[in-house]
Length: 83
Ligand code: SF4
Ligand code: SF4
Image (tube, rainbow, N blue to C red; front, side, top):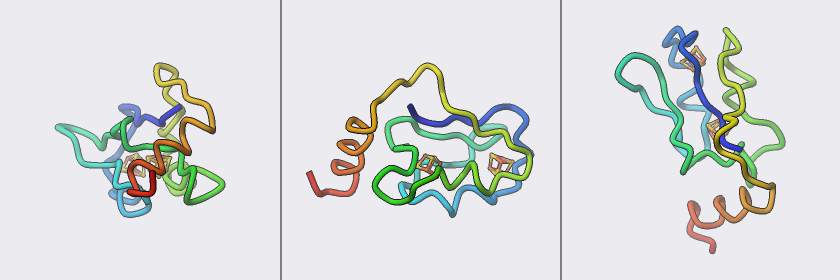
C-alpha cells in the first residue's frame, strides 16, 4: 500500500527530502506521492519516513493501492536497479 498526502498538507517541504525513493513532489496545490515509487519505505527503513516527519499528520496509507510486503520489496528492487 503506497501512502498518500491529504489536503490538510501545509506545504512545509519537510517530507520531500526524507523520501528515499524520490516519490514525493510538489503538486499543483499540495505535495503528492507517486504510488509507483512509494514502497512504504520497504527496502530502506522500518517505518514510512514521511509519516514520521509530517507535522500535521496528513500522510495516511492509500486504501486504493494495496500491496503485500513482498510486492513492495519487489518494487524497491526494480526502482533501485537491483531486480
Ligand atoms: S512511505 Fe517512504 S517511500 Fe513512501 S512516500 Fe513516504 S518516504 Fe517515500
Ligand atoms: S510534511 Fe506533511 S505538511 Fe509538510 S509538505 Fe509533507 S505532507 Fe505536507
